[in-house]
Image 1 (cartoon, rainbow, N blue to C red):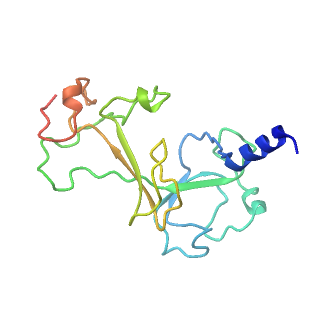
Image 2: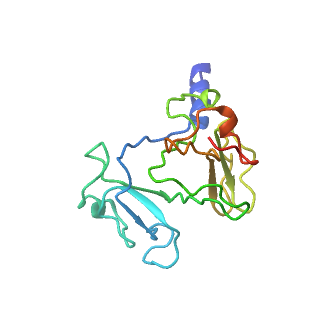
Image 3: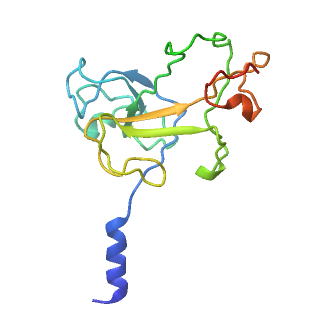
Length: 185
C-alpha cells in the first residue's frame, strides 16, 4: 500500500464533519424531543426548532418532515434542527440590582466581527461544560473533548453595566469588567 493511501486513510480517521445552517430564528419553542423522548410531552427541556415545521413529538421519518415548510435559507433543507433554548437570568440575588434592565437594551456578548478567539474582546467569555463533570479535557475552542454523561451546558458572560443614556453596553473596558461593584456608565 502506498504512503499516500495510508496518509489519506489516517486523515479520514480524524476528519470531523459539520453542517452550517442559516435561519432567521427558531420557528417554535417547545418542550419536546422526538429522538430522546418520542411521544412524551412531559420529559424534555425547552428547545428552539429550526427547519421543517412538520416536526412533532412523534416525528420518526424524513417523509414526515418533507410534508412541511422550512424556515432555513436553503429551501430544499427540510431537515429539522433543535437546540436547548438559551435562558437568561438577571441578578440571581447575589447582590442588589443597581438599575433595572433598561427598556430597549441592546447588548452583545463578544464581537460579531471576530473571526478567531484571539480577536474577541478580553471581557468576552463563554464556557461550555458537562453538567455533573465528565467530558474530558477542553479542546482548543473550549468544548469538552468527550461525550458528556448528562447535559452539555453553556455560559455566556455579558458586561455587568449599561450606559443608561443609550441603553447600550458601555464602550470603556473598565466599565465592562465582570461584576465587582462595576461603576455606572
